[in-house]
Length: 130
Image (cartoon, rainbow, N blue to C red; front, side, top):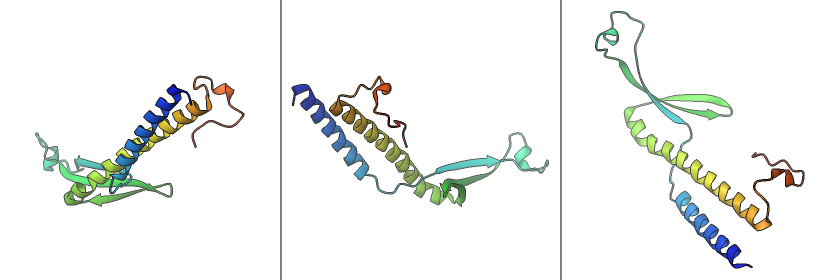
């Protein structure tokens, strides 16, 4: 194996090991998003319409998709504190998986000698992400 391919392979292996360690360090990963809102109501004489306004809330919701449908659940401030790091862990996990996908694609292209800039050289297969 030529020296540049060995160097590329060693760098790639180190990067993969770092990604695996970061992925393994993630504990809970909760999908979806958390939203915190303060609202005004429809009563014109309510304090939420005063100057300065005293808005209603906070109203905290966790929203995610289940079988293609949006599901929303109300959370208490204590639940927000408990689950917000889990949502962040899920975001970070998706980033790390994206990095692993990119690294794996780069390795395959390098190993096979494929030219990244000319997708028209593929063998007829669909190269879109699935």
